[in-house]
Image (cartoon, rainbow, N blue to C red):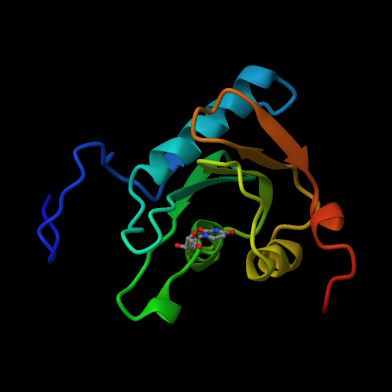
Length: 153
Ligand code: THU
């Protein structure tokens, strides 16, 4: 598929917003890795030609559905939206409100920005936050209380 600007992404997977995976059991390392792999797929769809910093996110819903998010940048810079909020807003828009985990990937395993931390706090609660680099080989695990110690609201 070619977009308005003439670029196409050969890695684009069909039905990007919804992947059902009831089998993900987060007690197992391999299942965490699998959620991270979904985030890597989302990252491959990043629209980040201004920053050249691609972020991918996969949000595991209570029923096993995985919602993807990637950062979308705009020539009108402030219109850019982070991968985490793209995934969370999409999930909420589709009626999901209970979540089990979120995985976030970027080249340097960056932690979420302040705005995303606020939205994670408000809408995801105490779920594990897996953060990995773009190799997906090693990750760290966080909870929002540690990333946003004195939350608003
Ligand atoms: N970005 C995210 O997607 N998530 C974050 O938590 C931090 C920053 C994106 C926004 C922008 O497209 C690029 O990374 C550089 O800031």
